[in-house]
Amino acid sequence: MHNYQIIIEYIGTNYVGWQKQKKGKSIQGTIEKALSKTLKSNIKINGSGRTDSGVHAWAQSANFIFKNKIKDNFKFLNTINYFLKNNSISIINLKKRNLNFHARHSAKKRCYQYIIFNRIGKLSINANRSWLIKKKLDLKKIKKAINYLKGKHNFSAFRASSCSAKSPIKTITKAEIKKKQDKIMITFESKSFLQKQVRSMVGCLKYVGEKKWKPEKIKLIINLKKRKLCAPPAPPEGLYLKRVFY
Image (cartoon, rainbow, N blue to C red; front, side, top):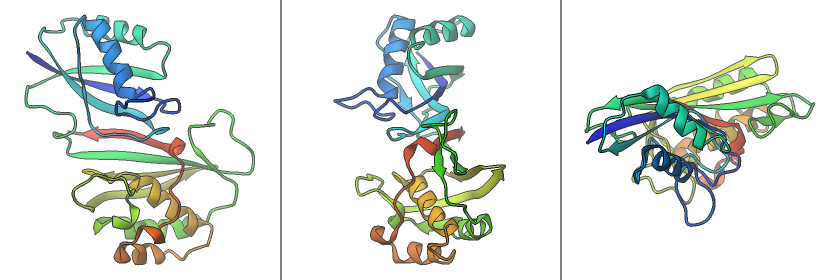
């Protein structure tokens, strides 16, 4: 038996999310069908995490077990991407791993990036791939507020009611914001995240940037641990799984 890791790029707009569900088209299910056709065998994959409906990925990671050795990476990538050509999904790399490797359990850190366009004009090229905020955001206040999210905290206020994580305690090792012209990029790194945590944090930062909240309110929300105090989550179309570290 052989264990393989695949690196996946996708636009999540027309999918119910990563995970297979009874109704709707999933990223996982679409890839498994293409893999099974490519390798002429029933293939199941493990993803590094479950991105929500509408969320995208530059480098999602998954692994699968296959009885035979894949000898030609070029042929494999060409073939599977042929079967995925009518989907907004690409397999961009294939790596041989030891049998103990698991895309989710072996991950040491995950990096998500949220993209905002802060301008009045509507989005064309970046429609459904970023969040358009027309009101001018105060970047200095957002940079001050984002520092409160760094470190180890109980993020109960930022988790979805349907979140199945055993513990709300997470450690944010990186939280930064960069701006290039009217494009704002917010990056978070952690070993793992709660369901809708990143989108909830971005939603709160937007309120700070719009001067609805003072930066210090982020600290208060963390300490009080109440979901009802959190701002509405940012929409999924601006969120990207950027990288999974092993």
